[in-house]
Length: 269
Image 1 (cartoon, helix red, strand yellow):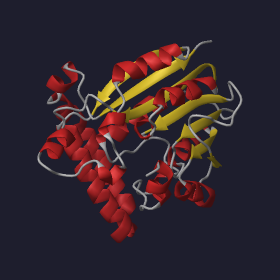
Image 2: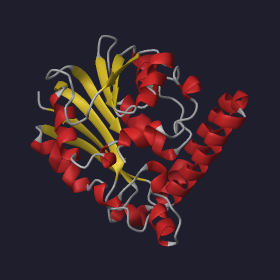
Image 3: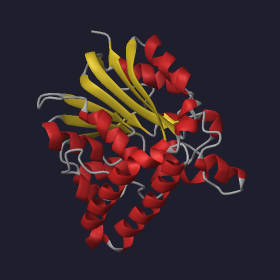
Image 4: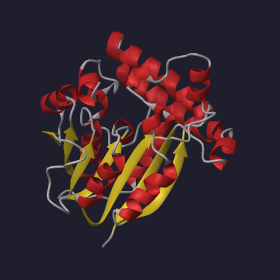
């Protein structure tokens, strides 16, 4: 099943779009999201800058960049459901139906390019990395987060070993998971310098994030009037638990094992 068909046939898995669109990268309801937002806050964009988000779903991250700096962006995706959400509700994101392997943009078009939870759905993900680098201007940033091939002994790995289906719900296939070293090499081969690499969600933080995802989806669908309060309370919980839960995962990070890997790269000036 193609990524387009899969994600078009399922309800959104990114709750609170209406609540978060105007939030300037300040609130998170998962520990993983907090790491993403920290990386995005380092971009230091200007109001005239344009940003590309490949696989950006509803365009919420681009709207949050706009809320912080005034930068506008393009949300490129194959899933029409997400692109329709961009068209209907986005503030600063323009929807474009595009293949990550053949982006319809000229070289050096964008100040920054993003891709979150998308590369693991692309068998030829190295070509997608090269495309992200190609369309980013010299000295610009590319921020990518993908499911890691080094996921052994993480929370989801143990659940899968116990017979729990943790893969089909997001169309995940372990043979397509992204090796962190190969990802860094793909950036270098494309002419970009890896500035930061972080291993996210080893065990306790992943269990916490998945519990928060279930709660968030429930509030979003069945008690939406309380969404704002839930996001505020969840953000406090995330900030309190981030450091202690991450500390328990030192053995995982020492072996570079995690559910996902976050890479920030800079294109050659």
